[in-house]
Image 1 (cartoon, rainbow, N blue to C red):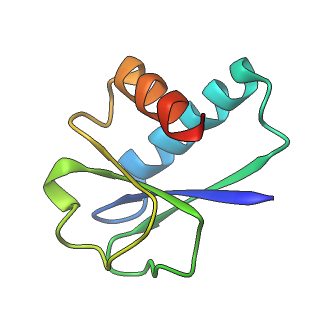
Image 2 (cartoon, rainbow, N blue to C red):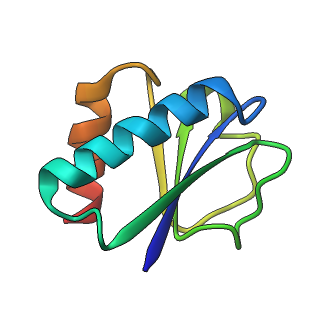
Length: 90
């Protein structure tokens, strides 16, 4: 099972919101059994924590280099998340 991690400044509010939206999108796509989700702060995450990472544009330079990164312009824009996640996972 692959892991998707959302990352924000404190690892509490916005990363948890995005994680819940990811779970919703994965259910809609019928792929919820393929992925587990989690969230973290930019200061606690490491490249070994997940297979895919999602972060806001303003924090992309603050995280360690990771292979699979989705950068969002807005963490609250569910349509942007859906589009990027769907494209990235196909």
